[in-house]
Image 1 (cartoon, helix red, strand yellow):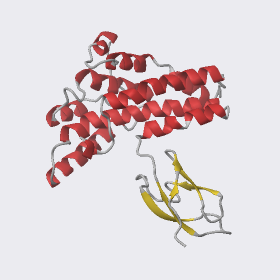
Image 2: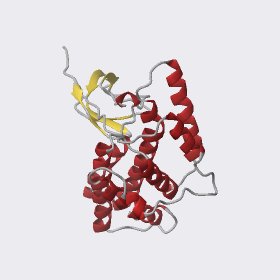
Image 3: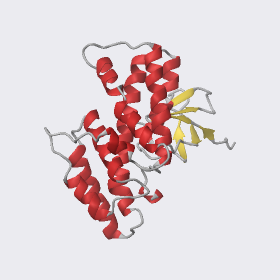
Length: 253
């Protein structure tokens, strides 16, 4: 008997599928079970329940960016009254957005239209340099840096390879911190509504709220506060991803 493909539900960490044999929901962890972080367009798997252990095929993974996938869980966390977790994951989505924005403008876009082995080597080298520059940065450092990039370049006036290399080389080393751009500088960023959204990112208190939740005080936010922060992130990060044409795959540039 040929079984139909099983369409999955998915988030950033796990893939959920109902086994067509035993009719139980099976949770496949992307790292431990599927051994990949790539989207699952189609894959043969085996039911993880020992009493079943029969093969079937899963299809239909999400191709959304990482911060988008993290935010997709937020509504469910609110429904289950897991407000602390909603706040921490919302803050993580911001950090993922900052990381994507930096790599898009400093690595992917400057080399997006260059092909060949030399271009690949350059991308890998630039990516390594950026990673080394930002790997110890906390939330505020990453926010200041992504705001600085936004002030200087975006998809309408991108860095070229030399400009991007110079910017990465100039990123302050700890204990120094990237300078926070002024409201005036951010307000001059071109593009309909983009400056306003970056100003919202600058003024967001999500990192302070996350620190209260995650650290020793273990602050428990109200639903209203968690929902406010989550909604702010959805109304800011998701439209900005589209407006700035941000992708984690260099082939989109």
